[in-house]
Image (tube, rainbow, N blue to C red; front, side):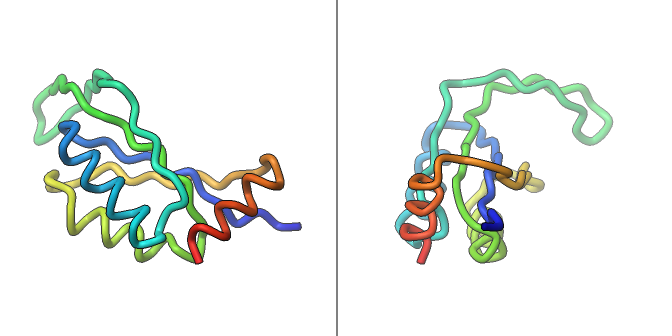
Length: 106
């Protein structure tokens, strides 16, 4: 059985935006689940300047079929000019959990 599930990473600048984005993704059935991490420290270059930020990481469980709409929803809600949205294909997983993702995103 081919696995069409995705784990999508997205960082947010604060708990409020993380909660808002996560809630919308699940309510709109674009994601089965969004886990929000405790604050993490991100170090990166933005506009030629070294930045250090406290961020919240969203771990979004979804499907290939829902990805385009999920991405557009994140872009429309995200406060960053260039939000981090990285999708990683799920190669394997507990079959019952993978089925649950399908059920929740239909």
